[in-house]
Image (cartoon, rainbow, N blue to C red):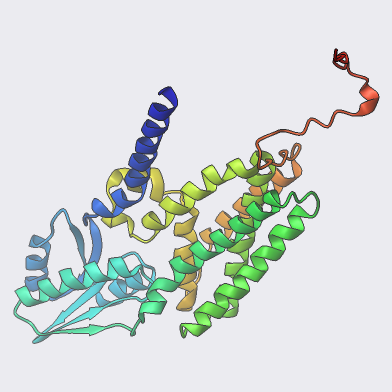
Length: 319
């Protein structure tokens, strides 16, 4: 009776926590302080400022300044108003969720001014929108499966070699998928993917070394919750999710970095983040003793040698 109650409660608690950390992120999405820029003559600029709200943060700027802000991803879209027309400029290197909100809001501003709207933005396919986060998730899964199999198959040596080799092969398979989807990555983007995959694999191998198969309790939960958060822009997330999850999840850095490099941008923070993750994985791999492999029957092999001469039970004589 007690076991039945404990397992039932555990299932309910796990379901609640996973729902809170995954579906809850998307269920609570609401824009707030989305940064946008508007270039307009003074009379229209005043009306645009009056349209500011809690959902958006509209900056009135000069044309050159607004385009610089867009290129630096400081704003999600720019509305340039000139006599008789309005132009919306978007940056494909910005998260699609952010550009979608920007286009909707800026279109409403232009229509409110009674102006026809044109949108200037490179055509981005569904594959290009999906690729950065998909590649990040697949690189995580590839390293995780390789580390798990190393434990299940009772690997003893060359764990470091196994993790690095798995990372390189996973990047090769992901690159092949991207090519099949019509996406060609640059040499810099490919180098970044290798860095991400190696750092993921090293961290996972280090956790598997110390925790054995129990590391799946950490790695699996990270995989379930991180993509749901990393796929959003911070201005759409509930502030709690933004602070507790989005601020540190490595999936966010890998997806944003790869998206930027796909459109010939440059990154710096992302290189340091994954260099640090790789270093943490190496430290875990070099520190301490490895976890004993978990046996399917749940019995731990204590490896008692015959030379220990432990007491034996007395022989029982039959009548």
